[in-house]
Amino acid sequence: MADILDELEWRDVIAQTTDIDALRKALADGPITVYAGFDPTAPSLHVGNLATLLILTRFQRAGHRPIGLVGGATGLIGDPSGRSTERALNSSDIVAEWVSRIRVQVEKFLSFEEGPTAAALVSNLDWTANLSAIDFLRDIGKHFPVNRMLARESVSARLAGEGLSYTEFSYQILQANDYLELHRRHGCTLQLGGSDQWGNITAGVDLIRRVEGAHVHALTGKLITKADGTKFGKTAGGAVWLDPALTSSYAFYQYWLNADDRDVVRFLKVFTFRTREEIDELEKAVAERPAAREAQRALAEDLTTLVHGSDELARVIAASRALFGQGSLAELDARTLESALAEVPKAVVPTLGAPYVELLAQSGLVESKSAARRAVKEGGAYLNNTKITDEEYVPSVDDLLHGRFLVLRRGKKTVGGVEVA
Image (cartoon, rainbow, N blue to C red; front, side, top):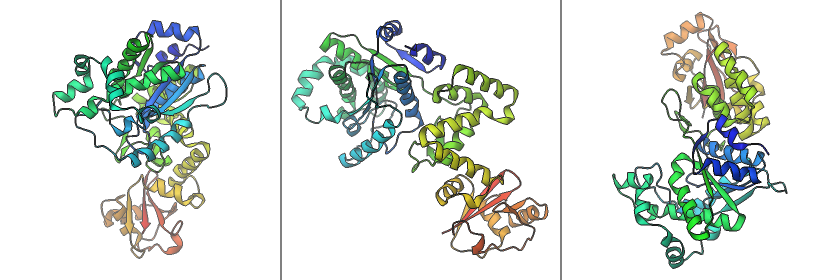
């Protein structure tokens, strides 16, 4: 059986473990059951969740049994970890809908084929919904010393600021109970999570020790940061989501394609299943041929395939090439073209009739109509990849792609668009 801890250490994703030597022995003694939880705080997981989900997937590939938990119960409460203010509570209907959507996302990364490593997918609402307040306090709450709960970073930070409601204060007990239930029901002995979950996870380790007298394990992944200081997993429009309705597959691909040279090797280790030898070669390419961006392309292609599938990867690559004059725009379907143009400067007009130079200025590709005229004179102005030589040219309905779009380009690399809406 592969030594998964050596793999994770090489990939530099481990932040904390309760006892790495004891965990290593447990893994060597035979397959274990491991779980990671995902709360429905939004209608989709994002790339930060993906880091944890991929650690869970690596455990399954190394011969262990994974459980994906979606927080149908804890999603109704809200985790105070990493937050300076009280979380707004969502309705039970919204949480139930988000649980369904996130279950589908988690399922894509795990194998449920029958066998010793077959994955399970659960919701903690299954054992929490019928838990009475009396049972919760008597059977679970009595094992949580308040002084220890107050000392947890997620709690103490809030108490030093705006304060914390009892609702969010109790979150760590609910998550600890999840670990206890999975230990009892499935023999689960390892919980994974992000490093901000350390206090909640170790609360579960302690609860199992107190109630069952068993020693179980915890492992958290490192918080992923970017070399330029910007927040990981963020674009100008917000988070990078796994749901293409929230972050299009084109935008998802472009996010990884634009990774900084200082980040790309680390991202390849965290987010792909490429081998050490393959990543070493890509690291060498970054150092010797940075302009070729081989590592970025490998990262973008692997991750887009993993999250959105190979067919979608082919579409976004075709769109990327076509926008820059290396393929046919007419062959792009409307959804792919719309997604691509959403990522570039774009003007929205009610109808056609304005000259090309005016549209070029409206799109933001040039600062003025006079600059647009200069671009035409200098031979660097394009409409749907066709060079425009007439400063007075007025695009017509015949120029529209899918009856809605015009693709504008200035020079080789500056792309924009027009949408008639």
